[in-house]
Amino acid sequence: MTETLDLIVIGAGMAGVNAAKKAAHAGWSVAIVDELPYGGTCALRGCDPKKMLRAGAEAVDAARLLSGKGVAGDTRIDWPALMKHKESFTDPVPENMEDGLKKAGVQTLHGSARFTAEDRIEIEGRGEFFFKHALIATGAKPRPLGFPGAECLIDSTDFLNLPELPKRIIFVGGGYISFEFAHIAARAGAEVTILDHGARQLKTFDHDLVDMLLERSRAAGIEIISEATPEKIEAAGKAQRIFYGKDGNTQVKEADLMVHGAGRVPAVDELNLSAAGIDTDNGGVKVTPWLQSTSNPRVYAAGDAAASPGKPLTPVAVFEGKIAASNMLKGKQTEPDYTGVPSVVFTIPELARVGMLEEEARQTDDVEVSFTDTSGWFSQKRLGETHAGAKIISDTDGKILGAHMFGPDYAELINIFSLAIKLGLSVDQIKTMPAAYPTGTSDIGSMF
Image (cartoon, rainbow, N blue to C red; front, side, top):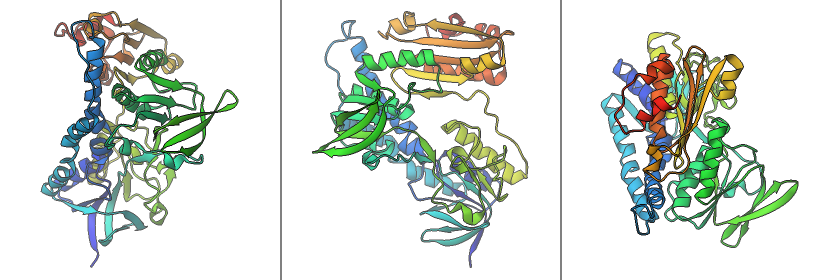
């Protein structure tokens, strides 16, 4: 007899796990399925392991910045040992995640999944399941690239599992992945190049602070080639050559490893969505503002798999998963609130933003913009940091519209501004906040 479930969740990342537990706690019969180990991209193949590796790069960079200022000796990264440090976190995740789901009453399944009808799904090795509701939370995958030899590029998952770090590395694309991994690899001693087809990198971040990041990246030994269009990759002995168009000419560069950093797309193309009558938009599941499929009301989507207004960030996936589950449970149409969601590029130092960009704010309001070079402040001076800055955007009533920061520990500081935007706080209200001194937070009052 084919089993009927109240909810089947496809994808055991942050969106799927949170939704599955919420529905099970409410008494629903719930199953979750993934063909990969449980934990999703963030815990296993992205955010968390990346920051584990970044810890080594931070330590090396900190020592180099203070060389001659009280720190002596040659600090270097032992890549295999750093990888083991990363694995000490990632290795237990799948089992712990699955145990937590089982304790919550969720049936855990493994294998590929594909829809066979509007209310049915087939799971590899387990047969067909009927469902009253389904949640698609399959995340994203590297964007397909059309030039010859693109299959030679490794993806971010492969990079995070390299047993040894090659000497020469080229990152194709000028986004988060390329810059974050380039900063790690450069501190580990690799010769690093970022090859980007665009004129500007990290376009969703403040351009003044991106310029600071580019200067800091080059000072760390990272070569950045913009307006370079990849044409083909071919073998060169044990190495590889990439041919790219630049200034009307074809140029070539050789490396031992080439990494895909040219963006990601929703990972839904293996689900046979058409069998369930599920429409897509820009590659993701087309959803209503409350995350329900526009064409199959039994189905919801959350996280990177959904064509929602939310950014492809872990916190967004978490609250979208919870809201989707709540809407299914209660039959409501609650919409996610994306106000005040921060995002960070974890370079060294990090680049952070929350709220509107300056150009966005100027299109809608009369605004006040405070741009401050903080590189000479005590917070940076004590670390030997050479580049840092902050840009705060507010309206004429003093309400904070956006905050943009580049500097050490600014990934933590941006959360203060996230809360301010979420709660509608003003510049004056933020200035009245007492802060421990000397800390990065105590700098906030001087940034306006």
